[in-house]
Image (cartoon, rainbow, N blue to C red; front, side, top):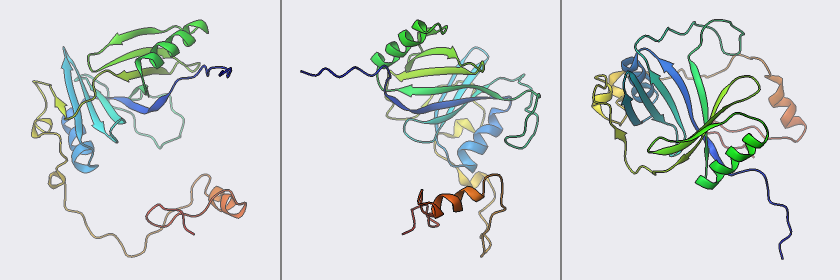
Amino acid sequence: MNTATPSPYVVFTGVHHLAFITGDLEATVRFYRDLLGLPLGLATAEGATRHYFFQLTERDAIAFFGWDDAAPIAGKRPGVPTRAPRGFDHVAIGVASKGDLFAMRDRLAASGVAVEGPIDHGLGWSIYFKDPNNLDLELTWNAVELSAPLLADPDAPAAAREGSAPRPEAWPALRRPPAERSATPGAGHELGRYAVENGLGRYADDAGRAAP
């Protein structure tokens, strides 16, 4: 007889998507699909809002809400504090099953966290809540496993109407990189040597594999 205490946690599948805001979907498609090479996996429209997903993996994506009157993001270096408006909207974390979604909904509610949903978005079900920093979080379960890109925005910008596949020819041809590559030391650069010298890791080769 199994007497183990059930885990209160659910099975997460990864960061389902990071949602940002843009006032220029044309430029955004060109950058993420054609320059970075991320397929446009989903493009939807409802009223004045468009929602576009660029696929990182089969389950993970970078998403954008397209709003024509969105204010441009104030430029700054990553990690530097600012009070200026930003373009981030929410983090969506995938869960493995509908049961996991309801289990976490109940766990959050029992802990006094206000939860909205589940909301049925057609392709998935989601719940919404905030963390102690007032960060908007979403947990989502894929109700439909897409087998092909779904591009359903009837008023898509010209770049998006070209389809899902990246078009590298939309940007200048790749130039040969310099023979010698190096990096400028930044915050935490001593941690790599510390980890290796203390047996906590190994240096990776140029292909990203751990060196022997």
